[in-house]
Length: 505
Image (cartoon, one colour):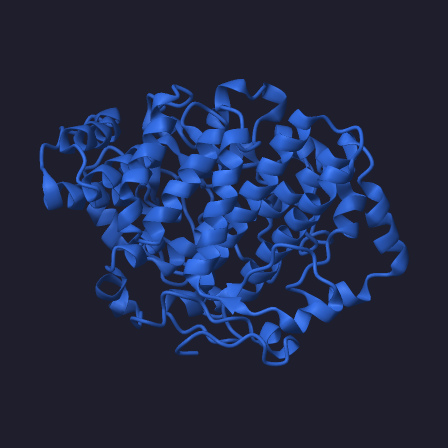
């Protein structure tokens, strides 16, 4: 079981008590007074505060808060990398809707994303309000956990900003009477809060080299710095490109991270929390989850792994999956001949002794990085819900490429940018690139596409570099609309008009 997960089960009662949140109004109003009283009395010592902190981390895992809403996998579907897949077009309509940019306020994955992130924000806000009231908590404990809570809140808000654009900004726990006065803020305002939280957190987070084996999965200084750099890039803050380079170079020069020697090792269980991992979202194969617990936020397995496996597969190495997010032929063709192909894509029709059922949008190509490996199958609970594959949220290769981009876009050293880009290429035996200026920037973008393929970064990269409308128009992308999902209709209805719909929906 992953280290951060071992405390989550102990925190079950706390998860119930703090499980209410602004984004689910009826749940908030229905909380019984006894639960509110227990919540008030809970934060009495460091042990309880630590469990509360774990409950914030726990929300990162959730992919069941409104259907199957696996963040990175659905972003693959929204990009030009993957289709929706499944048995047929009616298998998961929300996946098909985003794949074809036909989402509407009642159809799409938006409700699950909204609920998950606002629940995480509620827990972070509650923690930040309570932590300084604990009399015997040490200053070191407080400063580190406050930094983690702020960093997690920034992560939840960054996901909301990228998915929805204009969202409510909530930095404190709300009373029922506050609900109708909450308003949406523009992306710049939301990002200002993200930036403030991360800048506050960075000085008080430890270097990865100072995090012990029992704390793997906790946020570090390098993770927060990389998050902030990624945020500046997404917001297209040209005035902050120098900061992108500086933040990423501090991560690089910390000597806390490095590239895995073999690209194929990155996504193996043995490489979880390895030297290339800047930030991971942890899952467990030992939680014994079943369908009775699915949808409660209680499951600790990564169901995305089951989703992307080959449907009804029978053969060597892999376990059968459900055939979602089949890789588009265009990506397979792009990677053909690249050393990363075999570690990124399964060419199912070439597996000797293997067979599978061809589902919706079948191409014969499937995601390899998060594929269900038979040897890793959980022995207890429902196997589909108990895959233990961690999500590599930020890899060191990504940091190197962000540093290169920040240097080029800020007018920094092309030679240094080439060095970072070529470290990524050299790892897989590709020749060095010597381009400069705008051509170098295009080479960096191309390398991001190849290196990070099927990891859920491509859609936001297309949006932030203004390529989405040209690349995704064939799939139905509409410029000025499809960059964001619609606000869930139930949230608009519950707010009695305080929340308004995104443009084009």
